[in-house]
Amino acid sequence: MNAFTGCAAAAIGLVTLVSAPAFALDIHGQAEQGGLVSGRAAAGAAVYLDGAAVPVDPAGRFVLGFGRDAAPHAEVKAVTPSGKAEVREIEVKPRDWPVQRIDGLPQEKVTPPKALLERIAADNRAIAQTRESRRAVAEFLGGFALPVEGAVVSGVFGSQRILNGEPKSPHSGLDLAAPTGTPVHAAAAGVVSLVHPDMFYTGMTVMIDHGLGLQTVYAHMSRIDVKPGERVAKGAVIGAVGASGRATGPHLHWGASWLDRRLDPETLFALTQP
Ligand SMILES: [Zn+2]
Image 1 (cartoon, rainbow, N blue to C red):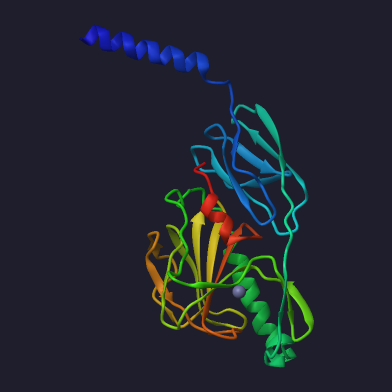
Image 2: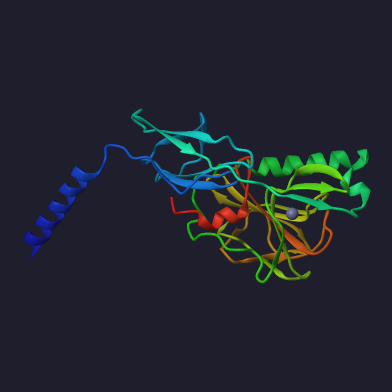
């Protein structure tokens, strides 16, 4: 029995040795504007997207995000610790983005008065700083789920909003309308990376860092149940739906980002395990 087991193990070892490529760079999923793909390189490899280093976990896992207006082609390069390089071209599918008009907003919320500009700049700095996290751990392997149950989608990612007739930045998330007080759940496991009680645009705001540069944001809440640095499981209640900040009614603005790029949260559901 021992001899037989030994032979089997030796045979499996030989097969692995023969069939394993010298070096593999795998990309999973179809890249599209506002979307993301996952990938795997050799353990210990450094990975670059269009020349910029991306976060990679020790096993070689990484994700790559593409903004709303991403170019149609991207280049991924992996370099092993011994210096061997492999390159893949990625095709990024274009998407059509809708136009949404919202009228009747208080004018001071559409064109903020000068006195508020410093507060808005401080909010933006806090969010940008949070997005710089490059924790080399994939905490989202259990996948993503909608953060509000039974919600109605009232706004989609990428739409160009025209507020009181003025064209604004494209909408950066998915709006999920639900009554004030409806629980908000963590879309995936991670660490709470930002808690803010009153941002000008997004009101009560929480961000969760899922690792490898991937984060989600939860805005306009009426209650926050978590603290910065707290580890949350997928589905954990982190607060409640509200209308704080710039909101015309109770809803969760749910956003996603990879490093400094805004992503369409709806593309998270199709993310393949790296
Ligand atoms: Zn929104």
